[in-house]
Image (tube, rainbow, N blue to C red; front, side):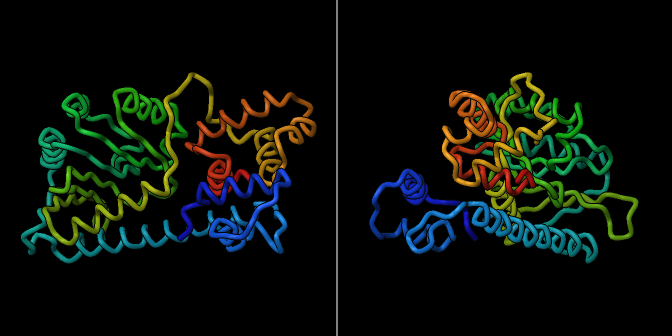
Length: 296
């Protein structure tokens, strides 16, 4: 799966856009493989961005399928029969296990949050601030739909403000919490519906698989930056779509400024804002994130 363009290839692509003479090498071969260069001529990056975004979507689909298989298997076939899984059916028992995992964590808490099955909003945990104060790191991937409501967005921003690293991705498949590499807690609706089964997973192949599942979604997810008070829920605007189209066509800031009738500085400022909004460190990454979200 393509993770994006390497820094060397990205710099070579930009140099070729400026008309610089370049030689062959690994970076040039990478550009050719991604369709950004053909017959030593620079090509618009739109199709390459679409290909990379498609590969991410394919990986996400495989990860979601894996999560559904794991959840269904252990909810339907009596997970209590194996010694590394505890079935929790009482709500108080589930909350207690969740809080205990955080209070006992030594290094890191990781979570996938599609929203509660009983409430559509993310819920802040009182155990999080003390854990963060002890130096426990938090990494959470939120279902993107959670950020489309005022309450959900505010809740996530509160967690970021106290030190949580948060990312977002569409279609988070299950509610998962992993404390260090010792225990995991997943909550899934029962096969017959109507109830929620929580599974407490102890060290095992299943726990390792859940850790890998989290890391796969973390790599694909988009960073959520601290709110600056600016309304970001209205994106993409028509102006943003036009700017992204010009960027994906490989135009320079000067050319984009002429097209939009603004200054070079304004173009740079708008691009920097979008990079922060989508958690992109480079303009190429910005194009990938925008393509994945359907902004192109």
